[in-house]
Amino acid sequence: MTAPGAARGPAVRVLPRLDGTNRFFWTSGEDGRLRFLRCTACRHYVHPPVPRCPYCLDGSMVPEPVSGTGVVHSFTVNHQQWIPGSDPYVIGLVTIAEQEDVRLTTNLVDCAPDDVHIGMAVEVTFEQAEDVWLPLFKPAEQLP
Amino acid sequence: MSPNPPERLERRSIISGIGQSDVGRRLGRGELDLTLDACLKAIGDAGLTRDDIDGLATFPGAGIGTSGFAGPSTPEVQDALRLRLNWHDGGLEGPGQLRAVFAACLAVAAGLARHVLVYRTVTESTAQGEGGRQGIGGAGGGRGVPRFSGVMQWTLPYGAVSAANWLAMIAQRRMNEFGLTREQLAWIALNGRRNAARNPKAVYRDPMSLDDYLAVRMISTPLCLYDCDAPCDGSTAVVVSHADYARDTPSTACHVNAIGTALRGRPSWDQFDDMTTFSARDAAASMWERTELRPSDVDVAELYDGFSILTMVWLEELGLCGKGESGPFVEGGSRIALDGAVPLNTSGGQLSAGRLHGFGMLHEACVQLRGEGGERQVRNTPEVAAVAAGGGPIAGCMLLTRGLS
Ligand SMILES: [Zn+2]
Image (cartoon, rainbow over all chains, first blue to last red):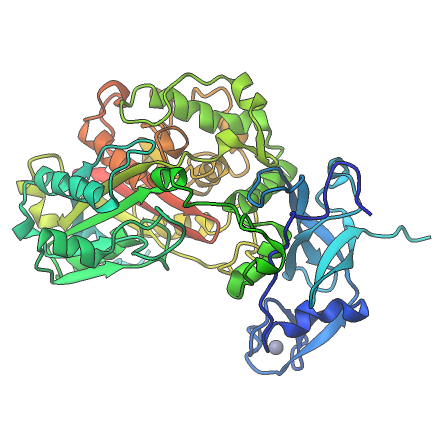
């Protein structure tokens, strides 16, 4: 669903080239889960993917699912036609709930641009494009 | 304080000469042509001939970025001037656009060269006119769009394709944390336009009002068109010489007092720890660690305005106003005017004078220290100038003084 006043993203999605390093991330949404590399020794999540843990320089890096929830750290509504044919769309910077120094640039969807705010609780929703599952974020479901 | 502080080697360097080509929209002249204009002016201004030039440096070096962005390579310029070099350097990675100047300062300090010609050339306006700088996906899109590896893979899928988008998120964050308003941010653009009216080479010189600013179209909220600098054609060159040449320069030598080069957070547009500062924080801190001068000594500030929000960040991180207080500081424009406490972007900055990519700020700092600003000269010729270029995870700054200090 597209919220009034904004598209879900640019008119054309420029996609990542999948390789042995990033494939787990960009295909993670196939089962609806968001994953990051996590260090087996110090348990930090690390993003973008690197072969050695930058915190402890020790453990192995293994993809592990996260909750998929986070908080909007900042955002902007893009109006410029960098990608011709695009309606205004919301670019967001989301900090994941598990670790405050892991952020994703993403699109914020299912929410009117005027309602987006810093600190807003969000949850992941995936958009499939060819062999890539792009993690987007929407307002988190209210807890009952 | 240690009894014998380490020598700051950059102080062995001066800017002995400056030069600038014509600057404008769609000049239709080649990048090497403009570069040679700027270089020959700088060499002559320094009281030298090309036979004296034994070092050459540029940012970013050929083949980088979109059409019209990089300018000619050092081999092209070396060959065009038949220079015999003891030291040469061109490259993108480093503390911002001024990295080439910093490298030149250290080269003369180390005795690798005595007179280094440093230039930066852009022909982005002409390239735009030829369709050389297009939006992504313009050629059909869908399955025809090339895929991306490297750092761009994390932003391009979401249409976060421009520094305007990334910096808009800095501005939004600053509005949230510090209460910055568009009416305050506007004063970076309005001050630039006011000063550009006194700069015959400025690209945009027509008066701009706050209403004009608030009415113009959005690029990426909260940044509007007037928050983004103006692509232009032009080349700027300086000669960095050993300080012992200062007594022989025909014009007043501009002494390099300190350079700021640090990058202590993650080198990333979306993972840097403090979204409100980025590495301007680190570059500024490292510069002040290398000098006895204090922010209150700065008489004129040429602070990068590739996007207006970056100037606000530099004002705060350089300590020219309080943390989070750049909004009220610039509002109304009196403190940053030519006769204000901190005369700012005195030639119009990149927003109005044209996107000379950091080297325009350096050139103007030297003009002001030399007292050659004409209609836009800051009164009581400034003795200390702060120059900053870049933003986000790519930033560098320096202090220049008229005479030794
Ligand atoms: Zn670890």
